[in-house]
Length: 448
Image (cartoon, rainbow, N blue to C red):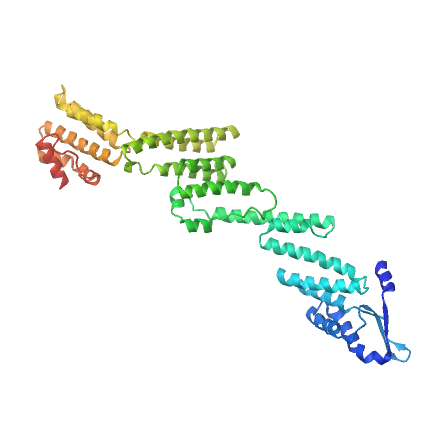
């Protein structure tokens, strides 16, 4: 307070003589009214001050002023500071404006205050510090609202705020950044298909994937956030799986799972999606040729090695529990895939066994053994043509067994009627006449 009083003592004083009273009287009253309107009606205060400032006849301003009303009779001294009052009114208006407009108002206020100080109003320095501080805060708020956290942080660091204010503003930017990132990550996670499977992921178009699954950009962020780093690794694996459910993409998803807390929602989702991607990749085994099946079985073995290494790494981090039980169950499913794909060469061996059944010591037993072996083989995955051959051999073995037991062709056809549709779906019999006319007749009747 004493500093302000001292500043007023040094303030320039101007006495308006009575002959100039008519020029200054309206400005004097407008200025007093403007000062009173700063808080309640700041726009009106700006208008009144602007009229004074733009009036070329008003040469005395930013001073302590009194007007000679009569010879030797004066008004009281008054702080005639139209520039300062306009600046304060503009700063008040900025409080209710959006960042872009608020910055314009504050910059205009700053210009007024600099001019006021230049004209000798030391009391305007305190208002200038407040306005410049607000310019920093509004600029930072604008950058934060646009998600430019790094830019906001850098702006605070280079501002003219004192050290304490800079530290406080920087901490606020970092907190807002972390909050915004947390919201975006939550939205990202909630937007994933539920349940998250390879099939559901494949149903998402490339355009929809890019639109729905977006993470915060890297440059404008403050600091390294562990959640964001994990989500980026997960997203990279997710994008790779969406493009193609390859071994490498599934392996990357396992790495993401391993980086999460075992047993957490993120861990379970990533691990199950990786497993599902392995399984989905092999779902079309029947459409592969024999060489393809062999390659696929090798892939299954490689996947099992990768999965077991993942499970071992999880076990090393925590005592056995439900998570490990889940991993063991999924490993078992992978292992069964390997066994489910039969070696197509077995069809050749069973055909040889069927060809030699009648020359064996017990043809009926030989036929039964071949038929049972073919039935088991057909429960596994086979290439399309191998499946067709195996079905044809199974029907032929069944027909020969029934006919060998003395049953009629009609009875054999009736007993094998359940195989008719399977045979048709597979593409029809292979070499129906290989085992004689009566077996060929059974095939023909089953085909109708």
